[in-house]
Length: 323
Ligand SMILES: C[S@@+](CC[C@H](N)C(=O)[O-])C[C@H]1O[C@@H](n2cnc3c(N)ncnc32)[C@H](O)[C@@H]1O
Image (cartoon, rainbow, N blue to C red; front, side, top):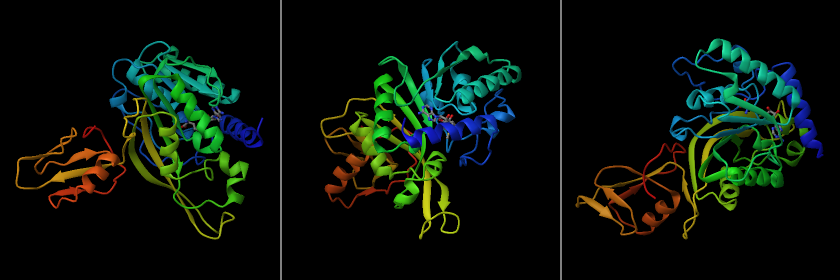
């Protein structure tokens, strides 16, 4: 096995045996939902960097797959929406993490009258070779795991998610990214990489891997500050800024003119007519902002009209719009 993957397993074995509250800084508030009580130990073992649980992905009793389980907080949150035996499958490569998570599920059962531990099925497995059938999953999630993988393994992990998803299924992920250059010495530090600090790639590179794997629709739902690798504490000359991003990649076919990538851009038509119709399926009602994918933003921009405003990416796309 590759050295850095061994180091990753060791780190998370330690993190299962002695919870480490600061291991991965979560930068978003934990979902509070009616009658959901999250055991304290799950909060202490929240090793994620955002959220992958979004009610709008969880309609029609989806079969959920969650890779890299940690203390199980997000598994419990997913089970909140499905409430059915084995509707949520959790996979992890570290035995100690699987055991700890199972214990946490028993605590969660005591604290939540609606929850049965059988709602979540925990299995040993590797993100790089999932023990899951093709086209069998509606929502596949990972939070703060894939950034650890080196490029070839990252591509493989994403291809595995694509393989197990049903057509139109969703990969929801939260992961660190960085637009700054991370020096090779830090990238090669297996411990720092396993701690989700030095494996990040740029958002553009991440999105390209998703679309190259076949996902036809990409939604960038949130982007937040995550960490600074500073020159006093890390072997770097310049400070390095790391952000965390939440993305939903949908297994839609890729349109002939390329994937639809929503990064939070919007168009506003403010001309003299009631609406603007580009005759390609995009109708802009006067003074009503409409979310547009980056492809449509470029096409509308190329029209060079002075009555259509196109916003910058907000990296906060919450549904609707063109395409
Ligand atoms: C940073 S933690 C994130 C935990 C959880 N997603 C959360 O948000 O709290 C990474 C998790 O992935 C697991 N893991 C590490 N390598 C893995 C692999 N190759 N396949 C599956 N799980 C892995 C670790 O044991 C750990 O539970």
